[in-house]
Figure 1 (spheres, rainbow over the protein chains, first blue to last red):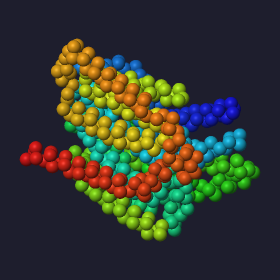
Figure 2 (cartoon, rainbow over the protein chains, first blue to last red):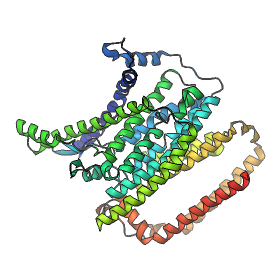
Figure 3 (cartoon, each protein chain N blue to C red):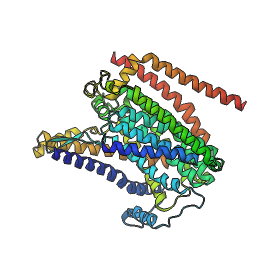
Figure 4 (cartoon, chains in turn yellow, orange):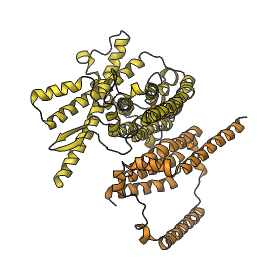
Length: 363
Length: 174
């Protein structure tokens, strides 16, 4: 009894550590890639002075952030001003707890499911914490007592609230297909193939996948939907009055939210941690070469599942950067038109069509 | 009750009192948000993940956003001076509040049959729910078969409320 408690606690801590290190550790790499990628796409040089290929630039940035003066505007409401960046970072990290990053590993004869919180409601819980991402935007804008910040906060929060609707309905159409809230069931459903394509949600319900993908750009306030911080109009939007590490917290939160959204997109529409095509042969080849038993094979499989999931997330993160340097920023009324007049009706029609399709195929 | 639940209860009680006595509207709204989050935590700790998640999605994620959004939009931050404390009225109000609370507590204690509480449980035990495929499955099945009509009637009521709100707002604009 005592032993199993210690084992469970250790495993839980290890999983939380994987999530924390995996996401917060990726942030500096992403910042580097964002800048180098921008330079690459615009045929510039980019940061290349600090370390090889400018790889140490994020480290230099971090040192600079930490040693900046802690400045709080005189008129600001200090408590809420300082609370906003904390909430900004916590909400997407909590949502990551439900996204599985592998099926299971077997350690000492005990199964460890590679997901921090095994919840009955799974995906809906992610939606709940994604919904909480509005608060830091509102709070930061309101507490700074700055017209630009308030404008940015109003834009950001109305944008997040509006796109949550089409995102939720696209998610709903996928829930109808899977018939489950549990991400493991979703991944299990997506194994197998449709002709030459893998049986991924994106190929079963392409319109839903597209709407969901567009919506997460608005949810994470990324270009072309970064109206909340449109530099040419409202300087830096809701985090205008934040400097040093407080600004860095918002910055990190944006990347964590991107990782969370990519993980959700991968789980719902792109097979989740399911092995990429060709990897299952690789797993059996490695197992045969080293003579693994069932346990060793499962653990090898889990390692490759983690690699598949990380690859998918990395691809979607690349897409985020790619789109950012390809499309110009929308105007605010265009953004709202797209959300309410185009995506919302299409997602509802898509939901009806998918429901009829599921009814037809199941009966 | 386990220790985490007691801690959450205490925090939510403190937040609820702060909500009542805070002067600035945004503090009150955020304390209410905190109470809702703590309640969701309590639901989660007793294993009712579905209710906890719905609490987060509906109350914390939608309704409180509307509250805080409108507070921010109207910029009520300077109206705290309108609420000047009048000690006599304040003590009078508190006395009445506690008296009413005392009566309620007394009547509930005397007339609610606690000894019958455990005998009148429904058919669902934790084992049965787990066997039927989890909390959310059982809940959705009940919602869409047994309580289908009431569910639809409630959604109709919500629709009426939405249409009513639009009509009211439109009249003001015209």
